[in-house]
Image (cartoon, rainbow, N blue to C red; front, side, top):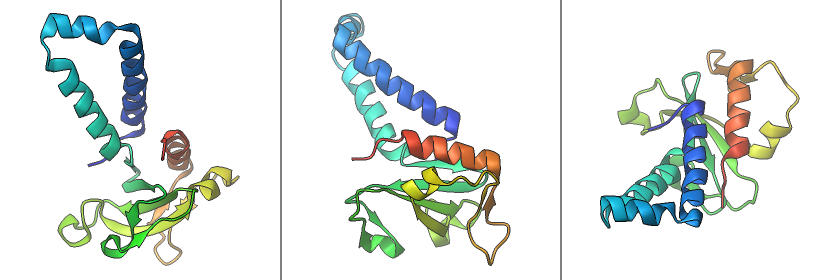
Length: 153
């Protein structure tokens, strides 16, 4: 499952709004109005969605995933990322998910800092042997926005 940049921003805004609702006591009022289980179930669903969904996003036919320090990645999740700088992985979402997994076929991986510091405004060729594995300038702006706002810890 992946979401688009607008949905990712909305989910992050929802997280901030929920923190404000907790701090202000609004959730207590809502619990009184709707019953004891509604607010905890809602907050649990948002937390679960955020943990899963905000690690990946679909841009121009590619699933873009963040791999934080301590998380598994690589073939059959055989590696553990041990650096503070998160990895950003690109997967071809059009490829057979039964063969390649839920994100599609792995294409390329970069450190987040490398992509954020890049001054290239023309997009990114993910694999020189496959010219169709390319993200355009607008797509890379969306990638940078996504990877620059996702909190990894």
